[in-house]
Amino acid sequence: MKNTTTKTALITGASSGLGMELARLHAQNGDNLVLVARSVGKMQELKEELEQAHGIKAFIIGKDLSLPTAPEEVYQEVKAMGIDIEYLINNAGFGGRGTFAERPLEQEMMMINVDIVALTKLTKLYLPEFIGRGHGRILNVSSPAGEMPGPLQAVYYASKAYVTSLSNAVWFETQGTGVTVTTLLPGAMDSGFTRASDMQDTKLFERMVSPAIVARAGFDGMMRGRMTVTGGLTFMQKIFTNMTHFIPKKMLMKQIYEMQQLKEK
Image (cartoon, rainbow, N blue to C red; front, side):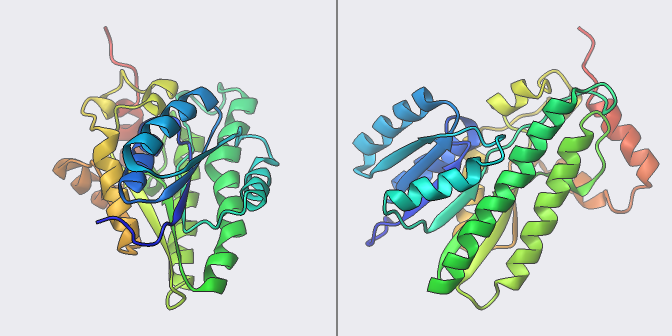
């Protein structure tokens, strides 16, 4: 059922994969959109698709969230357009395979800026507004990776540990305010993220699900105000994730390391 009153969702990383599918769900729900990503061309195609199919309005902000000032610029541009955000979806993020010693410092810092800094800033900018008016929902995309150390993706796993911890704490702090903060833990997805992270030829991504399945889980969980929701995890993956706190850490890291090695061709 569509909203009787039009609301607006701001979605980062909206040009492909999970972000694109979340945009489609919000458009189906009758929500207007603010789409944020680097690829303006892809967002323009999505804007035209969703405006024509659902009669909503979609606004595009081309921004590289790895740049320190980008989150504030997004916030100010939205304000200048006179748009009130009801749903903040911090979806933008990326990983990268390789040892911490060998990966370029610039790439690691870009990852931290997108996965941690941009998410923190946008949440910090919008949350007081949401609380002040007594309504609003935030969806922060984390990962089961945040539940464990990740050799060969050390910074990515650490960044997702931060996202989960922050989001869960703020969920608790906002109880009774009318505002909710939901953490989404996606399973392995068939998306541009997987290829950009050089993970498509690893055991960890032998079984991948459609981003549409994960998006539906995240959308429904956010709408219900749940603290944490998983999307696309198989039964065995759920068991493994739940067991990570009980497996000896050295044994766990050995498993993760082996799962993230490139398969022999």
